[in-house]
Image 1 (spheres, rainbow, N blue to C red):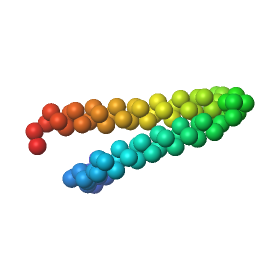
Image 2: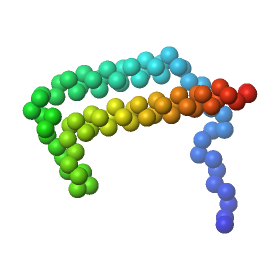
Image 3: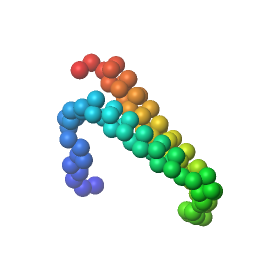
Image 4: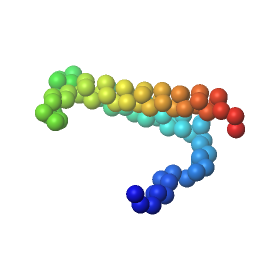
Length: 87
């Protein structure tokens, strides 16, 4: 079986500056919205082929928002779970 690998993460969580993290999320969300507003109407029909599937600008925009929302929900669930644990 071999040796047990070393953990990939520090055993102690690093402190997080919540205000900075929230500001970063707000900045990135605004940047995405601003960039999408710059896409000319005619370019929304542009597409690329990825793994034999047609991927258009609308798909990319929806996926960017969905992925970010999914990760934020993960953080919300983690915070709720950590709040239930006694420290």
